[in-house]
Length: 142
Image (cartoon, rainbow, N blue to C red; front, side, top):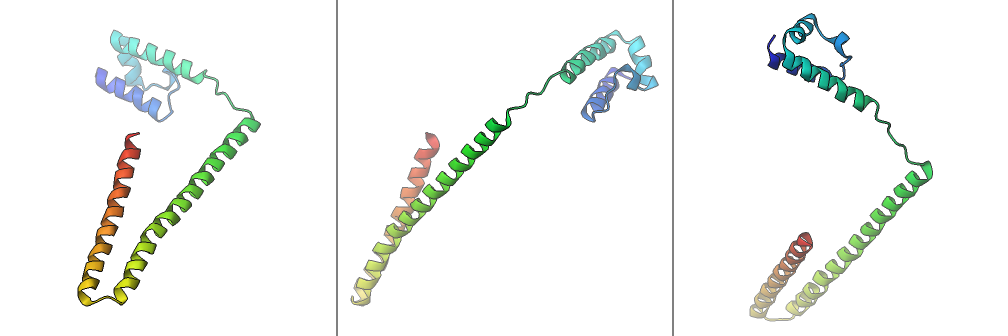
């Protein structure tokens, strides 16, 4: 067994959560660390890290604090959802009212005027699209 094979085998045991210390090593691995001082040192350090990690106490937060945080997160989500709905309605009104007004005027206009009005509607739509793009770029930078 090479040093690289030994290290890979130890890492695989750790990744698969099958690491049980020296008892869990194969006979090839045990004979390798008896002959190789570098791998013996690596294994000793790995055991120290493993023992330290298994002793870490995981703190739990009080139930009242947990539910308060959940409630605040839900409130924030509802608030942003309401703001989105209001902004969508305002955006729809900004588009529909001028387009509808131009369309109504276009019904009574000459064919040349209708074309001019349709071009105006398209330009208005492009202007709104660029306005939204500009706001998004500014918001993303902040």
